[in-house]
Image (cartoon, rainbow, N blue to C red; front, side, top):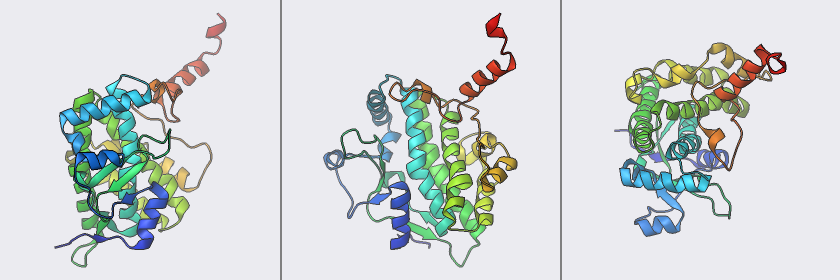
Length: 283
């Protein structure tokens, strides 16, 4: 049996430096202890009451009363502080982080005005499963990634969608955007593993993970990816390369943020309509 073992010091330090991943010295018990530490257990969001309360509180912190906006912003941030470290470890360490929802604690910032989701704290030691001699990296990778998608992200996104009424596909594109950035921008710049391995793992996410693991008819990562030409451009670090989203993440409706995100389809449509007929405004 492939049991999880603690990450080595260098691996743990990398995840902490890059993504603010932390771990507790010993497991935390009880709601009061979690609250005093500004922590919320991710598994609490699987319960309708807990999810409703978290989204309502987050909406207030964002300056709105909209659960859909809160759910979308939560998914974007959660993907950045939980999903991205998972796949970083998969590609760079050949390790599957042990992240059941019950062990993931969402951490708010300590300082006044700190980020409402500063990062992930793992309840107990940060552990991972490595590739074993008994299986190929390809079969291990499929099992590890599919388990994380099916039993972690899918369960959480379904709960957020039910509570907020926001289509799950928006949550999945929020996730996809973070992972595309990891493989197209961050990992190539870190230069920790060969470019061929980065590209192979990205293609695996697009073409091998089954749609059923996402609870969808169409595999979301493949649906939201715009093609190998963009990946090649990112590899060559060409300036001005960006990917326009298919769905809107509602960022422009966050009162305390304002404006459109870089990949907003609404902003692109507006700019294109102005460029198509510049004389219309004069008539």
